[in-house]
Amino acid sequence: MSQHFDALETRAPHEREAALMAALPAQVAHAQSHAPAMAELLKGVDASRITSRAALAQLPVIRKYELLERQKAARAAGGSVFGGFSTLGFGAAMPRVFASPGTIYEPEGTRKDYWRMARTMFAAGFRPGELIHNCFSYHFTPAGSMMETGAHALGCTVFPGGIGQTEQQVAAMAELQPAGYIGTPSFLKIILEKAAEMGQPLPSLRKALVSGEAFPPSLRDWMTAHGVAAYQCYATADVGLIAYETEAREGLVLDEGVLVEIVRPGTGDPVPEGEVGELVITTFNTDYPLIRFGTGDLSAILPGTCPTGRTGTRIKGWMGRADQTTKIRGMFVHPAQVAEIVKRFPEVTKARLVVTGAMANDQMTLHVETPHLADAALKNKLSDVVRDVTKLRGDVQLVAQGSLANDGKVIEDARSYE
Image (cartoon, rainbow, N blue to C red; front, side, top):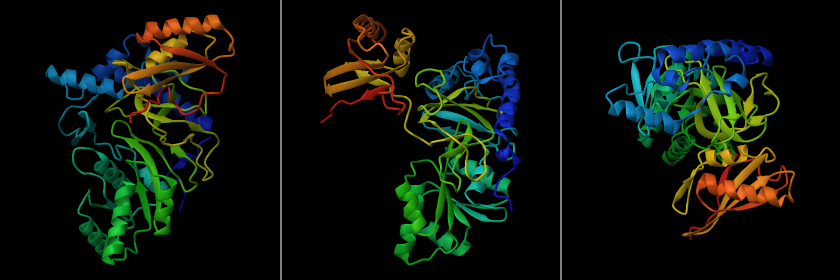
């Protein structure tokens, strides 16, 4: 049996890029024609010209909080619950609708493997004809359905375990003998510990696909020691599967059905390869055509290709949150404001706003990478612009290029709250 889900995974990188670029103009045009919110956001854009990453980078990023605001405004006005982002209406074309915290509503269409999860299940070792014990939530959020529809597309049967009722989960696993588990890693650990406490062996449970929370190497190794090979994937309710782990255990391989950019937080500007930034996703889902959707999550490109033969780009995995908005002296300061400061100075390559001090005694310093370390005039101009943009006074420190950490932080809150 092949170790790859399909031939798409082993395409030459230039073939994959060409296919993505060829599909991009049609998806932009479709979003403009069928999703009112995207039509407004992309007003004046000639879809036929969006044929490169450079052209795509000129389009606005729609971030999660903006999606939420538009949904709320539309609902308040008696409009679409989806805020004009969905091309579907209620009925046979939309069998389910889900809710994520906020509340953000997401549609589910009828297309087979709607969320594209079969690929990551295959990479985790699941195969057609197996029974999967699915412990993701089956209410409100789409995680349970995301995994179930992917399992069905792969040719597997699903036991909808959901969350909670640990002893019953153990009993069902002991009797049904599933090939593996899908759910959060923390709940799998709880189940394994409960099974040991009950003296109930689970001999069939030898593999798992986990997501929804951090999966540190220490927990992965704990599961391996208990006989379960667990792999992780990164997906969201907005765009489905984004990236998945393979047996190589080297980062996460990007899914074949999304176009991924990594941008400087607070902007839509792509960062150099290897630099940490916000993951921005363009989907080719015609039912929910999100173009340049900002996930709010940080990651970075991992050089090279996967030793398993998959040729897709890899990312380092989840590395934190990109929304670093911080309240300073009663004022909110956003990453976009730091980016605005940098844009005004071509001699500045990177900046980080560091907030120190104790409660009610905030001190704000903008650390700026520049080759002009002794330029007092530059420092004074930066101080003026910091005040102009943020409405707050702050110090400026000129630092050597490459000295700021590559962790995606644009605003660092280093205050003491004791």
